[in-house]
Amino acid sequence: MKHLSVARCLTLGILLSWFSLLHADPQLGSPAPEFKLQDQNGKWQQLKDYRGKWVALYFYPKDQTPGCTTQACEFRDNIFAFRDAGAVILGISVDDVESHKRFAEKHGLPFPILADPTKATAKEYGVLKKYFGTLEAARRDTFLIDPQGRVVKRYMDVDPKGHSEVVLKDIKELQKKAS
Image (tube, rainbow, N blue to C red; front, side, top):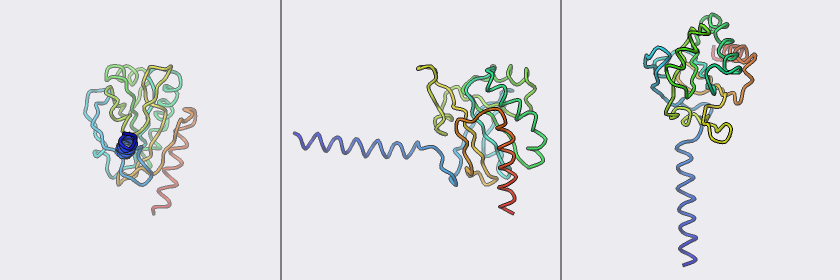
């Protein structure tokens, strides 16, 4: 019986390891996980729609909170510099479309804010986090995705103040290296 328990434990361990590999965070150089989510206007957006462009894909915890507002507004304020660099900005949180609509309108956000109410995309990117013990929301992480759709940089638990400038600077540096 003891051998059976050890065998079961080994099997379970192997299965858990295999499962975790299937749901591992995106690694640098790997294809960014695809998604299909609605933006603040109810329009469906897919990552593949942005092939050929640099993508700053930023996850944030909650609409209308101080840090999330700072981060979104700084991306808004740099929108023309991102466009000049051939880059797009996409924000994602687990809030719903209506919440995003109010957030985008209140702060004049000129880029898609994507609703992930099922939390599937946040899980796929490895950013789902528990806050206050029970509330699940996206951690403040950003993924820089190249025009071929590969993850080339990940910023974890970012400080919202000044983050947009850091991402823009990195895009420009990566573009120089690629040319």
